[in-house]
Image (cartoon, rainbow, N blue to C red; front, side):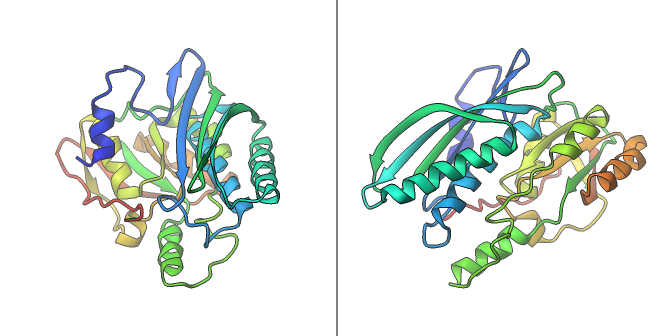
Length: 273
């Protein structure tokens, strides 16, 4: 168990375990987006940093079939950051939030030696998609084409440039697919730590294992920061889900079946050392 999961395991709240805490019809989620942990400023413009920080936070709401309503933002501002850069950051976060009908209503600012952003999203759902709910025999599938984020992160490490619309800069959230497919899904979560690691999390919380149905390469399985969806569902709904995927322009790949065993993927952290 790594230190992140060790810390979480020491908390006793019944609301911990999903992408967001569900209390009534309200969901609360928070993610950090820290310099030299999730990004390097030499790789991204301030606008790109603000946009991705908001997208990865809104992803938690989208993943749980919730509609973001409000955001609270905390920013650690390095002393060398100019007022123009601060304006660029705030405009980027606000415009991205507005795309999802979400409003920034407050937060906190502090001085620091690096640009760190932490965002809390408050959202609403009358039928949230949880991580619990898998059944033996369910199919496991992921949306999108995985691997681009890791591929481009590796390129950035080599000092190369990547496309401005790369998934590393610009995650694609699958709001339409989740909204339309929710009645057919038993469980789900977004893929932030890589397909291998997040599949393990989903299996752990449901106390199942898996059998492989299709090969997954390490580039696909270990690519973090994808923010695509990992979902579990009854095989009888596969054809219907494939139709929803086609209607919403969402690639959907079935890769495993839920089984009564302890099978797990080999999981490696994708964060910077």
